[in-house]
Image (cartoon, rainbow over all chains, first blue to last red; front, side):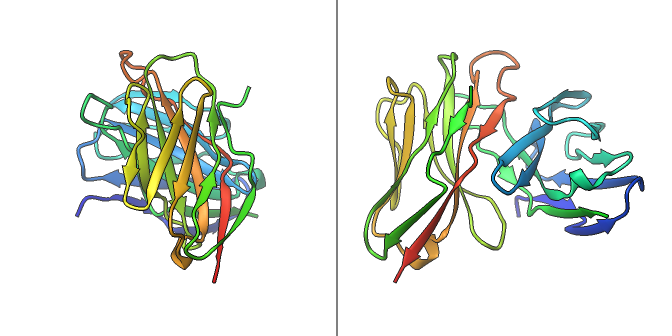
Amino acid sequence: EAQVTQNPRYLITVTGKKLTVTCSQNMNHEYMSWYRQDPGLGLRQIYYSMNVEVTDKGDVPEGYKVSRKEKRNFPLILESPSPNQTSLYFCASSFRPALHNTGELFFGEGSRLTVL
Amino acid sequence: AQKITQTQPGMFVQEKEAVTLDCTYDTSDQSYGLFWYKQPSSGEMIFLIYQGSYDEQNATEGRYSLNFQKARKSANLVISASQLGDSAMYFCAMREGIRRSGGYQKVTFGIGTKLQVIP
């Protein structure tokens, strides 16, 4: 089954304790991206990657790191989480848009993170 | 300027009626794509419909249609014959620079419209 898998789905942690949210896709997509969703703000892009070893900042990258060492994996790293990073996080992937390919984003199920 | 504007925080519609969810966008690119996603209370993001900037006809997918007015930069979602299961948050999104090399990385979302279908 084609899917984007995120782990963990739920996490409560404390300020300053490093954590990693994993993301894996099995569709051979070039593009992967992380979003955070907050009430009243919609989804905001944190980081994206167009291919292995190619990553770039989105609109809200502060406090986050990413890496893309393999095509299928795109982990999100919070080196020193703070309460303002409490949010619902989505990983998404897609093919590169082309004439017969919309470049539709496929989303993971989301990871709800609480930082105390 | 906001890239994607959804001005309706909440909408109500009677079951079996049609409803239009508004979306306007801002881009200087000639080649871009517009998407609508549905997020039910369970939280997952469900792709509904896509419209390319060069598509001459409005996109349709079952009960969903996209009213694309390029000159006005609007991409409204029309849901016909609303069902109770349509109650959800709806997000409009845009992918810019589709034909530019390396330019397809930006996918911007609006803040969403919460639709409630009344029996």
